[in-house]
Image 1 (tube, rainbow, N blue to C red):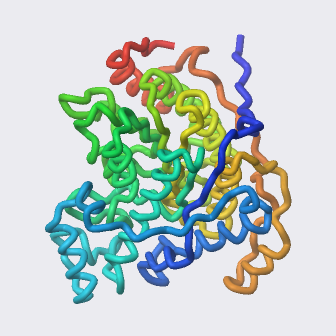
Image 2 (image 1 turned 90 degrees about the vertical axis):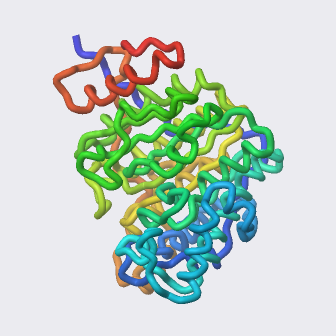
Length: 405
């Protein structure tokens, strides 16, 4: 007998009891590696324009992004590394020992200030939620999850996500859960809290056997004082909506519920889409939206709605990123958009005029985000199920959970 697929709800809670914000100002686009680099800041401009035309910003207060302070940077980066970034900013010269001046992370004018500004924006999003001024807050320019304590990596100079989480801990938050759905392993955030039992880091990504940064396997479970708080699900290439959602729901909700965080922090890199040029998963906008819905629901279930959402990767800058992150912002606002909505004509004309590109017609890819629940059993003959089972086996017992279906 075949178990019928589970259909993912298309909306979050109908009412969010609290204000919601997006931390944004146009100068955040100064984080710009140049016209040929995949991390094109126009993707954020297009997202905010689309969100505005669809009325999403009518339900979100736009908060200005402060500059990250030296003290805030030092909570997550070595002083020598910060000095190296400042020196590279002034000289324009590479510093390969610190990962500066590589193909991924070229040096550009104002690299320090632009990177520190994103840190400040992400800490402000965390402050909004911690203070109770906002129930949900987002910084879609954030999500630079690869930066390490002493070096740049993977388009990331400073790790704004880790800085935001550390700020929450410094305010006295006892537990934070971080869920990263970017196609690349969230290695920098994981490493920052590798031995800190107060932070649960969960990353669902394409396997490091084939994709940068080459890490993020099931056996990577955290340091000796925090075993089980680093969780990695390494997915095979070609994984589409049904497989990705099966893996997510087999791992994330149970762990987050058991961990009982005060605040949920998430990174929504949308480079898992089938059209993304830098990776090999096969999600649709509909599948990505289903992940955002699930995270929103989880924040309400476990954290009284306290949710901080960041952007991240995403290099299909017209066809994917603006639609995916507009759906994200709509959920942050507490007023989700119907997937079948038409993309506004004014926005499509703007894309045509500015970029000479034909924009998508609708906010959907026409997919039905459904999956087979893990509780119905797993198939050791499939790569996906073997990876999910390996993750559950490695970490579930450390949380007192049964790894078997």
